[in-house]
Amino acid sequence: MIYIDVRTKGEYDSGHKDGALNHDIMEMMEGKFPNLPKDSEIILYCESGNRSMMAKGMMEGVGFTNITNGGSYSDVA
Image: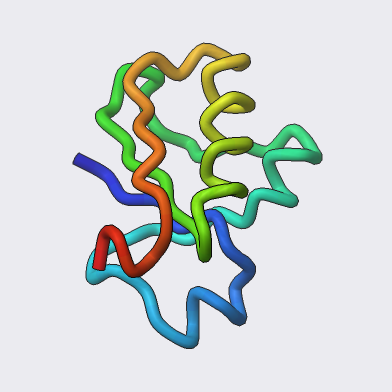
């Protein structure tokens, strides 16, 4: 299971789930996605759950198949 924090680097640096990768949603909006197998079990989170919900849709749109919106940082920490 891979956790991806889709917040900005500053938000990530201020606190994140241990072991989580940081991949800002703005990079996904530019067409840059995590370099991971498309069938990886991935849980996305952000500050409130809104950005992770949008990131989930974008990642599914490019072929990721096992994505969960984990909601907010406080939900997964």
